[in-house]
Length: 111
Image 1 (spheres, rainbow, N blue to C red):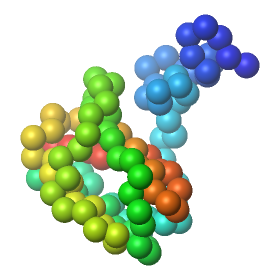
Image 2 (cartoon, rainbow, N blue to C red):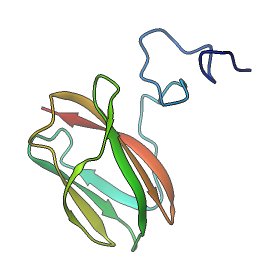
Image 3 (spheres, rainbow, N blue to C red):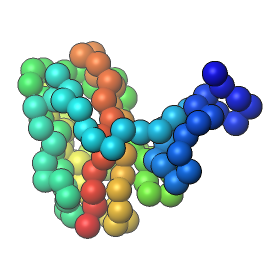
Image 4 (cartoon, rainbow, N blue to C red):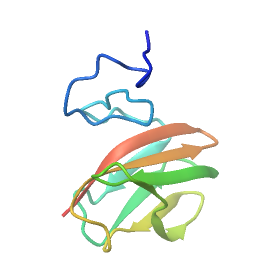
């Protein structure tokens, strides 16, 4: 059931939500094509390490105020992405990633 405001009308007040207004999970589930994301929390950079080669189709981030922005990518190849986080505001940022192997979103904590 949806309403005129968003596609998830029963979202808890104060919850983190996606672009459809649906609540984001509190925990990070295992994403089959991602080996690990580190360091998290971060302050200078973080690395997304893939299990196998991936073609990145789309990558963006959402800041603590809900603004969507393109991350400052320091290095990218088929097995990993290194993102500069030194200029990000402190708080929880959401990273959204689409590859040829699937989609994922996860929280990055910037100190």
